[in-house]
Amino acid sequence: MSPKQENIGIPKKQPIAGRPPDLRAIYCQIHQCTPDQFKENVLWKTVHRRALPFLPIIRLLRPGFFKPDFELIEDVGSATRLHEILSVINSFRNDCEREKRFFHDQLRLRISGRRFYQVFARAREQYLHSQSSPHESAPPPRP
Image 1 (cartoon, rainbow, N blue to C red):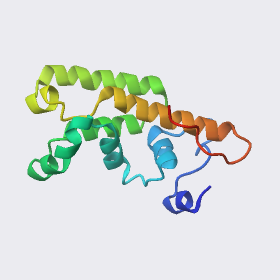
Image 2: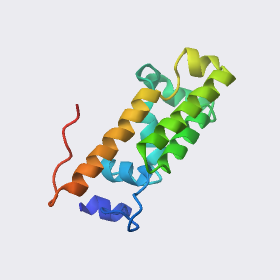
Image 3: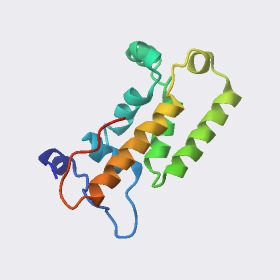
């Protein structure tokens, strides 16, 4: 375990025998961020690329604009299985279809569901790989 991981208090192994860690803990371990940095870090990695330049401005002018996205991140962070991510993402998409918000939907100033799933699936894969290795190893290369 790296000193950085020890400092942020993220366990290297599963925290409770028989119970897998939630995706927040896995993500934070793989990306070496604290649980307090989790939502912000995920937002920047998963927002549609065309929205990135506007993210700081939107958050300054309309602080609650990304509230549904942060709620999605929080919900997925407590998941322990990949199918739970898909369930939460599908629910989020259904809510978006019902609410019809122009900037959020038409201009895609929001999280990309595909990127969102890929980020968590990759983090989980790297975590499982590190757990199955008898020694510390680097995470597998990104596709």
